[in-house]
Amino acid sequence: MASIFPTASMRYAAAAGDPSQLLSPPFDVIGTEAAEHLRNLSPFNAVRLVLPEGDGPERYVLAASRMSEWLASGVLALSDRDQAYSYSQEFSHEGRTVVRHAVLAAVELAGLESGEVLPHERTHRGPKEDRLALMKACHAQLSPIFFVARDSARELPELLARAGSAAPILEATTEDGITHIVRVIPVEHQKRILDVVADDDLLIADGHHRYETALELSRQLTDRPGARRVLAAIVSEHDDGLIVQATHRRLGGLPADWLSQLEDSFEIEPGPEGPRALAREVRIREGTAIGVLASPGPDTGPPAGSPAFILQPRPGSAERAELTPNEAALACVLLDRLILRRFTGRDADAAAAAGLLSYHQDPGVACACPQHDAGGFLLPPISMQSLWAVVREGGRLPPKSTYFAPKMPSGLLFRPI
Image: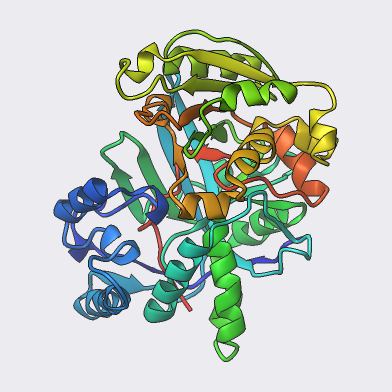
């Protein structure tokens, strides 16, 4: 069981301007052009803290000085007491309007081996070093970590709805069409809601790098009690708005005959032409299906004309790789162990650092491989049932195996440590 508490917070005040111009995605999904666009929306957009401009250590000094200036000028206001908050995101998904409900609070940091907080992905070293330097400079947590509560009794959505009559302290509609509403949970409801959240397993859905960074910072700042907890947005597993999407891969450094070499581990059959059709087919099949769009090379036409295939593991191939039955049921693990490591000799962290592996939400971008030695690999989304099955036996999936959509934005609250 995790320990969860109301939290101190800094939040945007009226002087910051239109809240719809202030929120930003978390740092790891913001490209260079998107970062510049967000900075142009407002001089106080959260991207100016979570992804400060420049290179080297001066970036972190810049973010810290901005936070101090915003507090001094009244752009940010410090809460007068610890609170728990309700947060809702209203968005469109597959032609319908969906609302996702979360609790914003502080989770007591626990080692990942303790079983109180369950990770499901391995991490990359570089982002953790970056986030640690930023957090140390600002003495604050700038984005909530996204957790999923098991909520076995299915109580949390109803409890949040019942406690949601207070006036919003933040209401914004961002450019992606998502409406965000944050309310203080009335004191008389806080204990019950936090008890329900803490009553069962707590899974890290998104923010593994930031959680591990917060753990490291708590070890370094033993004299700061606030560093022992982390800002969290917690959603019930049974919330209608809990949506898991796939993250696709582009893999380079492949030998010329890489596809034929896979015949000993996979059954290979033709797939529908084009990345979007191939992604749809993989999603329908679920589980272990991997879509492959192999590059025809730079002189033979666009990726849409590339040969498309679907891979399914042959009997015994997962066992030879020493995968558990739950791991063997997931395409992302099969890709990592039977393809990436075989052809690159590296794990995902090393392959990404070497520029051989990249991650993409858009199947068309993943399959845009002009190099003759690269391929696009399309994966199905992972069900929550499969995810729990792996993490409860202590398993960790490769980085970027899941994409919980939409992301939890930065700027809802900042948590001082």
